[in-house]
Amino acid sequence: TEAVSITEPIEDKFPKVDNIKELESVKPLTNISNPFLTKQEESNNKTAEVVKSNIKEKSLDNIEQIISSGNGKKQSLLDILFAQGKISQEQFNVFKSEILSKNLNEETFVFDKGIVSHMDLLKAKSETYKIPFIDLSNMEIKKDILYKFPYESAKNNLVVAFEQSSEGVKIALVDPLDIQKVRFVEAYVNDNVIPYFADEEQIKKIIDTKYSTQFDTEVSQAVESVSSSGL
Image 1: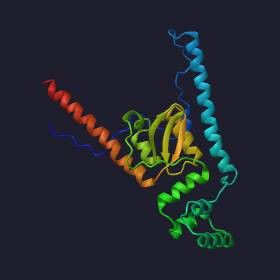
Image 2: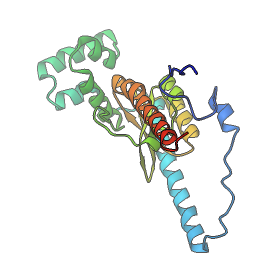
Image 3: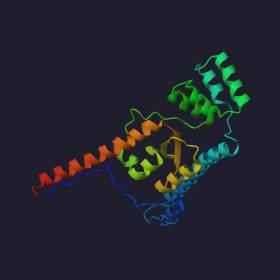
Image 4: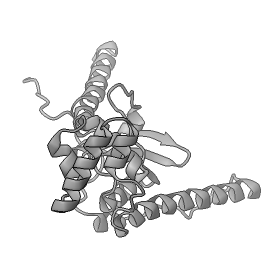
């Protein structure tokens, strides 16, 4: 018998979905009551769902307000970089003048000039847009959290689910201001999501290595199980 080679890190464990409308047409059974719950427990569960729903709407509404109000920034990137001591007063004045006189995009200007490192730029954007930043470089992600968003979807959208909290699933994105993508992920995982800014290369590294590591571990365990059973 020829050995089967594995060319992909891992296959999706979920059905393929082309778009969010197709996904939303399949609704989970959420209205079935549990006969073993007391009335107090049912009431507590309903209250928890209402709280989570409010958290979700506030989170997404905040992003939508940022987008609809011309990014809704209270401080510019240059303001924050200056406050953080990343640029001097003289640099701030020169850069600000050039951006205004030439009607340049501030983020593109900062990036093209190489004024600060890519990571410092991400952190400044996080503070500007009031959306948290996550450093994924040394993060251990639990298997059940990682698999909330499967390999192919994670790779195509550059999204990684990295933590579960009482408020929902925390996800790392290159652009958490992409409201359509945030809503797509939320529908896919069937839970509230809390978007974070993250470095693109770190996201790619987790997708390329963590899924593969999890799959290799499962294969090894399966082989050991078969060997120990004497088959």
